Image (cartoon, rainbow, N blue to C red; front, side):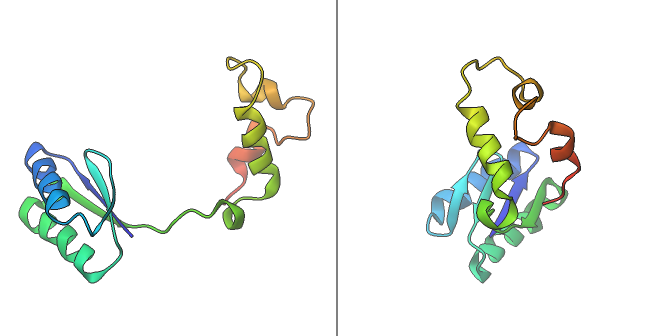
Amino acid sequence: MLLVMVYSRAARTALRNACRSHEDVVVRRFGRAAVLEGTAYGAFLALRLRAAHGGDVQIERTSPFNEFEAVDAAVREAATAYAARDSPATPYAKFAAGTRHPDPETLRERPL
């Protein structure tokens, strides 16, 4: 997939028009950004925008995030437990203290 981000009003208008005209290529739209299918036609649309708007258009190649391949079970379980915590104001560090959930520093240092 291709992530297209725009940084000017004219480029945003062009992105919006391209997304409306070519809905079959658009995976998701986010205002100033869009995810296009990773096909030659998706690349054509992205490159057409960059050709017209230069540095106001950034294109990144992306891949779907598979949490079951990229993240171990302890991190997934911690995220689920933290989302279901009793008090929504409890910060994660306090929530994880004294539990089997990884502490925030460990999570910050662990690469995916």
